[in-house]
Length: 312
Image (cartoon, rainbow, N blue to C red; front, side):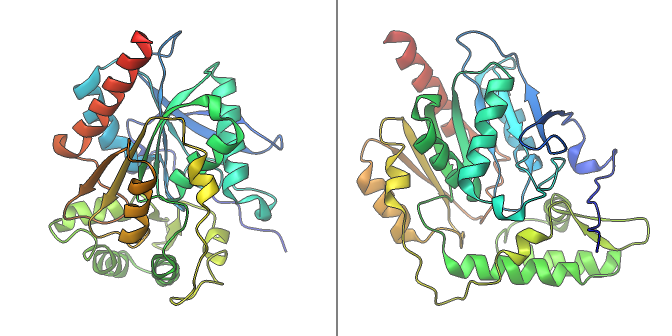
């Protein structure tokens, strides 16, 4: 049976102002979508943003705008859709939806852009991709910001994500989708109005011409979560986290996240006493990064890091 090809509307509102270039990575028919803002160049180390598990670059649209205002409009920022997400191709070989392969894809994207390193900002699964990249090519990581990302995920969050995505897949009307998505998102963003909740929902799903809900990611990603249960005990991969040992590090955790337990976050800080730690109040995963207060610490981290490199 032929698999239905996932499509994304060309004029989809969540991707407005995020034009992309697609690069062939791996099999010839598999492409990765990349948005570049600012100016790439020699000695201009880009900020490379890697989104969460089933998510895409639209999670960083507000962040990029605030970052440019805080740091400088022409500093390069790269937004990447990992394969199977957003406007990138789905993988033909579903077994390759793993952090190590995604990390190698990001490495190839940097090579295609003639970039020999970056400061990486990863949310959730994207942060685990950054850790895997550091294990593979530590010289490429000039610094890292991890948000709700650690050497182990909270199985409770994985189960909730799976159940929510399955429920959304069953929605067959715009009204039903809005009601369901608002109910699912409101515990993570208690102060958000309905308009913002609708914006967040539209970053991962859209309604086709028949009014049916379609995912902006490969549905197989949901199937990969089937094995997890609430009471699973997952083993932390501390060697993966330790791959960032030589890179300047900022650790951020949203107050309401279910992706990384508080004790894991605290252990990460303990192991890297030189790292900067922040809690983003009143929100869950993914971090909104839509205010000056939330973005300025990241801009300051980048500012200090680049100043230190220049002085070295």
